[in-house]
Length: 105
Picture 1 (cartoon, rainbow, N blue to C red):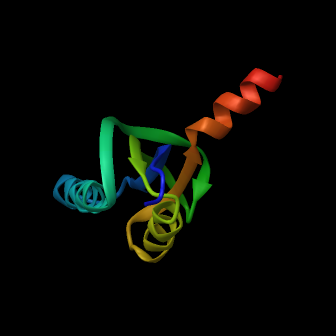
Picture 2: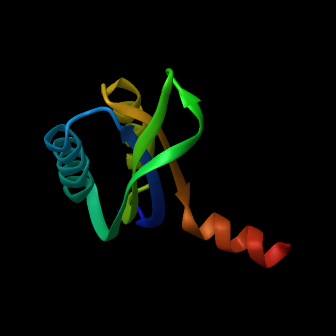
């Protein structure tokens, strides 16, 4: 059995979508992560101004998720984010790598 790793995911939903559409996307990805791992924390930052325009949009809805899963799932999750309308950006990092890099610095 493959070891589960801890990950941190930050994704930005298109801020021009309706509240219902934003909540539906968040629920979709929450369910997907729960099917393939375990969520330890979800932190919705809400609508914020982007550092730079993405597709001529100035605002996005930020969501931060901490979860554990097997090592193959984050690549599949990134693929799904890439083909989902309404997702502006996403980033997944493995937390052990971050701790190791911080200890070496």
